[in-house]
Image (tube, rainbow, N blue to C red; front, side, top):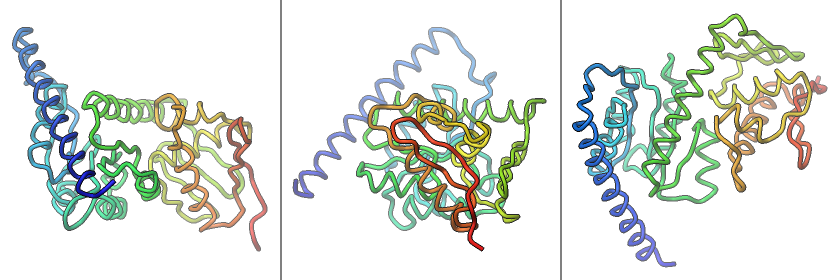
Length: 282
């Protein structure tokens, strides 16, 4: 397929998406008026939407606002990074293909920031739906990846799943059931969601921490791919879903960078995964 045809298809799909969002937002607005709801009394989760498509940003912002979210907009990577130093967000929705600082570079810079904003969940979106783009996004710290154009209802469902998962984790960590876990040189602090390997800090995304916590909590027993997906991503495993595989690949790389073969994530073909203590290099 030629690039002109591809670009034409993307533009047509984007236009259709905008029409859908606009009609959905209008219906939601009329529904709220009919029900006489008062948005001023609602506590809205703050979201940062980063996309250079100004029209789509405005439409999605209206749609998400009507669904109960407070939305800040940024139209380039640098503007997004500036906002993250000033505000705390429940989720960041980040487009990949932007002029200047693209989505990948923006995500890298966000994860390198100091402070709690560096761990903010990020859902990446891109008109380029190739597997390599999804892999790159997940490997550099994205929590989820959604190809564009997408159904706004699916975007909304992904956002709510991320927020629900974070809320459940916070509830668990502040309860009496929160516990620290250890396997050999690997130590997880459940309350602070931090990790150490061989007495060195292990820089993990929230998703990677959840995967490691689930595997370590199983005490070297087998954890199925379905269970790991539900625990880490708070959704069911799809028939062609490789998100967990990508996160595990990135996690193995980080473990080996600090202490090669000290901690092993074994794949049991057709069954799941098991975390084991290995034999680190001398």
